[in-house]
Amino acid sequence: MRALIIEDEERLAHSIRRMLEEHTSFAVDIATDGDGGLHMALANPYDLILLDLMLPHLDGLALLEKLRAAGKRTPVLVLTARDTTQDIIRGLDLGCDDYLTKPFKMAELCARAKALVRRAYDRPDPVLKVGDVEINTATRTVTCRGKTERLPAMEYRLLEYLAMRAGEVVSKTDMIEHLYDFDSDRFSNVVEVYVSSLRRRFGAETIQTIRGQGYILTGAHT
Image (cartoon, rainbow, N blue to C red; front, side, top):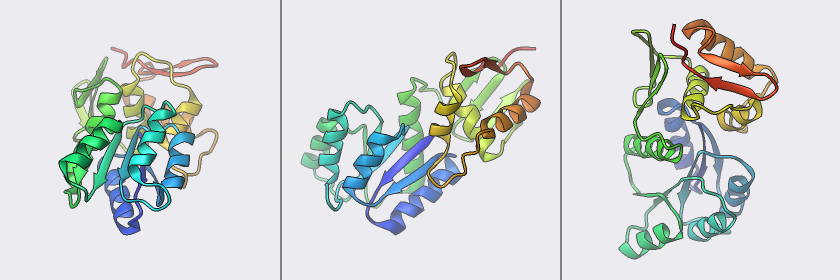
């Protein structure tokens, strides 16, 4: 999954980024002003946006309004020191999906972030089950045929994304756009490398290749 943090307090933004990378396995980008954040949010297929309201150049509520007017349905978690009922109601009316008042606990932020992403993919259960494969998004562990293990970050990220979209054919381009931030090296064959590794772990038929289209997670039974 890929998230965008729009926050002008750079130390806070980087702390949130580090927490999301370590505890949710998200790929994370950062924008430090409203104009830049809006541009990034419109140009990239994020799975979640974490939005501060008090931003330079374009405030968070105006950004949110423009984002929704442009047809973007990306879940938005508002992070703000504004905690009046009026501010909360306005943010919800403009299309935010959840609200967290500063200061907040990082663990709560991570839990809310994961819940919003699951909801967006219509996967409310934190345990994703596809055939023999069970992915616990709370603990980031994978169980297959009675064996539970913790995968390397990128393997887990790819498997979780395929599970969120179980039953769909997911293109290689789509995977790259949702699994990597701007700072990552996006080599042309990197998806194939991780798919091959997952097949070795869970069986060759677990992830099927649809020629010319992409991949589909079947979690095939043996």
